[in-house]
Length: 443
Image 1: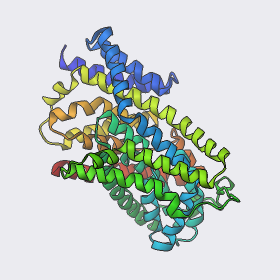
Image 2: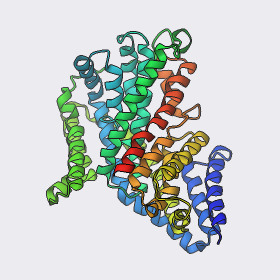
Image 3: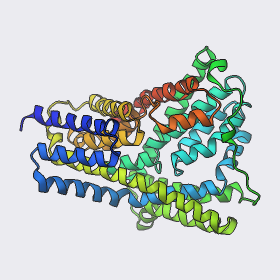
Image 4: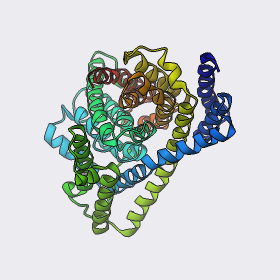
């Protein structure tokens, strides 16, 4: 089969998945499986090998990320119930002051709090951002709206255990600790740099308070109050902090060649998050009613189920792409330079996101299609994952549920959301490629 035919079939597969989701209104999970079936059959794998590729890809990926996603989402749900977020933001205000708050707030949401499912994290933190926006001087609302958007979206695709980052690491079979370290560096740089750019533009007239802000914080963003005394911040954050420290320690030990069965065991992200989850359960049992704990766990199981299915079928498509031999074909079209291949990953993810409107789906589809071929070009898959994540942030618009949540839960109009969300996160999508390309050249 000629190179052109293979490339054309792959392109048709991507376009077909988009059309099925947008026009036929087929759920993304089914659309991805249908795309994998088409690619396998028309590329010569035959029925038996096509089915084997799909099931193997799904099963192998669930082996890698299934427990990690489930434990991470459950831990995040319990952390939200323990009231840790509100207290953490209060500490940030008292420690760094109002002037630096947008930077510390966005970076914290984008890194430390990524175990919490994105929509839940947004609903919890938006009321705090709204109230604090009135305390940080000129353009406070604009800066906090942008900080929220950047923290939610950038952290989702770069920082483990954010579900997008976990899915990307799973699709490309990456060590989660390594994804955590490289992703955290990329996320913090991207959030701080983009927010500084947005702040400068806002001060020069880009943000029009009369047109871009609502006069009052929406009633819906009032934070829920509780009559029960919640545990102190240190205790509430301890399970999550311990899990992240164990993951980081395991990754650092691996990078420096330290071999220890204890470190390897405790530093494994699944074990680290399990330890954190058990710790959060113990604290919750001590401080919360049983009904509230059950509700938190129920929400966690509901949220993790749809994430697991979508991630798994992304693995099916990735395995099919590998089996049709696209990697060997692309190898002949690129030099050993990392710049062009990573830009290709970014472009594919960006186009998919513009068409579909799902950050996670766009990133794992781009990584699934192009990730398996990059090792043949001498490119570390960690940077493929980061480039796919960066591209999937481009042009978050009205098809995104997060866009409308950010608009309604924060003191901004739709016009304002187009600036603080669509424009700002698109800038982050481009800015993120700077550290990604630099790290790809160095490491």
